[in-house]
Image 1: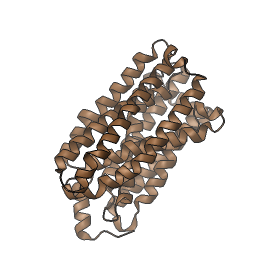
Image 2: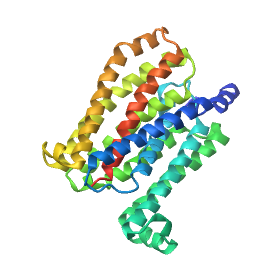
Image 3: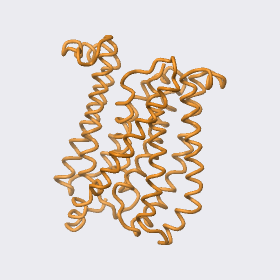
Image 4: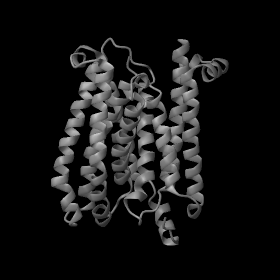
Length: 323
C-alpha cells in the first residue's frame, strides 16, 4: 500500500468526510429518507408485529454501510488515502447505535419500556439471551473499528484501511448469519452475502459523494465503482429474492402478509435502482470518464441514487425485524 506523503496527509485531514455541506446533506436528506423507508414498511406491515428498534436498526445499517464504503475507497485507486477522520466518526456513531439497539432489544424481551430497563435486567439479557450475546459481539466489532480508525487518524503511516474493511465486513455479517434465515439450508450464507453486497453498493457510492470534489476524481473513480456495482447489484437481487421466497414459502404471501408486502416494495425499488443504474452506465459514466461532466453534476446524480438506496435500506432494516 502506498504511504501518504505530508501533502496527501494534509489533504486527507482537510477533506476527510467531505465538507461541512456534505455532512449537512447527509443529515438533512439521507437519514430522513431512510427513516421514511422504515415508516413505509411499518405501514405495509399492517397487523404484522414490527419490533420497536426498527428506526435505530435503519440508522445502524446505514452507518455500517458508510464505514464499509469509506474503508473500500482506497481499493478504487492507489492514489486515494484512507479517510480516517470520517471512518472514526461514522464508526463511533455505528457503535452508539448498536448499543441503543441492544438496550431496546433487552427492554422488548422483558416487556418493558427502555427507560425502565435496569442494569441487572440488561446484564441478564447480555449473559443469558442469544440476542444479547450477538449484540456484545457487534459492540466489540464496531468498537474495534472505531478505535483503530482513530489510531489511523493519529498515525496514518502505521495503519491500513484494509483492516477496517475486514472487521467491518465481519461485523456487518454477524447479525444476518444469526437471524431468521440461519434456520434454512444455506440461509446464513445467502443472508450474509445479501447484507454485504447491499452495504457495499450503497456505502461506496455514499462515500464517493461525501469525499470526491473534482471532475478529475469523478473521472478516475466513478467508472471503477460502476464495475464493482454490477456484481453487487446481481448479488443483492438474487439473494434477496431467494431469501424472501424461502421465508414466505411461495409467491402469494407477498401480497397477503405484511412481511411479503414490505419485500414486494423493496423488490420494486431495487428494480428502479437497477433501471437507474443501467441508464447511468449509458449516460453518466461515459461523460464522466471523458471529463465532460462537472463535479456538481456528478454529485447530484450520486445523491439521487443514494437517496433511493436509503429508502430501500429503510425497508430492508424494518423487514429484518418484522415477524
